[in-house]
Image (cartoon, rainbow, N blue to C red; front, side, top):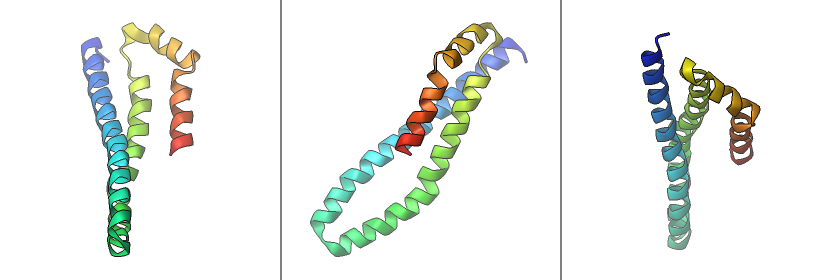
Length: 107
């Protein structure tokens, strides 16, 4: 693969990875805020909130977290050839494994 094309592909994957991480984490924080509001509003609001969270979880958070994980793996494997030493250091230093453990523990 051409070095410039490889760099462009890596940057695109990294951008999408960060975007999905923001959706995943930001959405989780937003849900927590809305959960507190729904609990204060009463049982009828809590029921509707739970149904909405179920819908959003299945259609936004689950796909986002799966794609996020796959894009993270792709980003680590599509580093430009000129940066191969950095990729090796990241894997050897536990950078890649640490992300997987963090996702599994919080997932």
